[in-house]
Image (cartoon, rainbow, N blue to C red):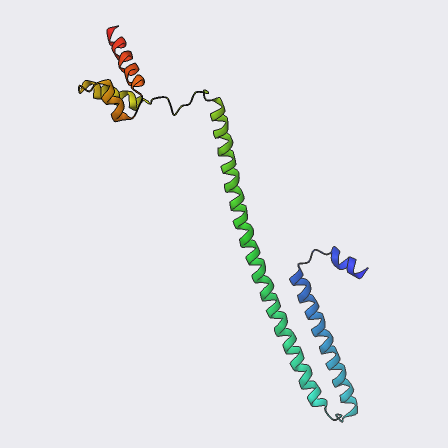
Length: 166
């Protein structure tokens, strides 16, 4: 029942450990106080009492030191976990953005005509063909220079001639 009660509290683990440490320190101090109270009534210290008190003080100091080191270690681990979580959140956001971009590209590609767009000549290819033709090159030389099919070059030149005839 006590365990369930402690579990129902919303206390961090380091706080619970610190609380336990303080409780143990108080119990040790209470034991030492009772010992001195008992000694005060008897007026005479039994043999080895001084050594026992000295050992108890050492134990108490070491317990405090261990508790502080433990709290420091836990705090460092919590900070490290927070940093890792922040980096993970950042990576997740980046991945979501990439997924959104990929979906957008997929939709755009699906909406594009089925024809192979890489095979279609670009406007700059048209201009290059016309420019080289004006310089006096024949369709075969233009096709070789631009690495395009000769039929394509002839088609571009024919379309240009037809549009000028109008």
